[in-house]
Length: 217
Image 1 (cartoon, rainbow, N blue to C red):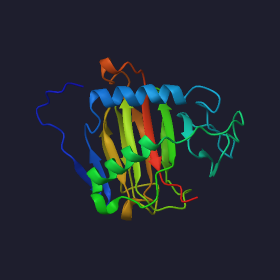
Image 2: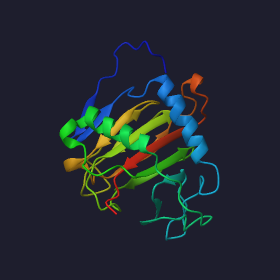
Image 3: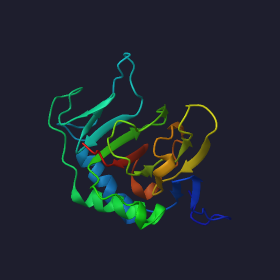
């Protein structure tokens, strides 16, 4: 995407407690986060295909830190994969998440407990994510979402249903999206990834989404 847009993107409150902050990560921070994601994606406990209880598979592949998520619970080992212990959640990710919450929602929204879960999803051009809620945690702390690589359509809905009303938001590489408070359990998904839209200098084909959460476990 060109940096010299006619109308620069502004931060926006999509719903109460849900805020989009464009270009939150600069180019250097994006490269550093990408390098970390590539390390985390290596086995053991590396990038995997997630299988649902009904026998289907998610098109976005995933690796977890801190706690391993599988449909629909958390474990300390990759119970639906190679069985290895989940990779540790680094302290610097907690610091990044807290800064993100403060920048998006204000210091009063930062939780007292530490962030201790990362779900990292890799989307190729054909991957999608259906409408769902992040409801397997015991904590109501805001969810922090960071985007790297290709631009996607992020569909942010309501707490009652997977259907309308919802708002489609364009998330580009470096963008931050935080949702908490009244929007903490809102349905959301990714209906589309725009292939070939990643910043060329980043060196990533596809999209990475890094989602940071407080488990309360």
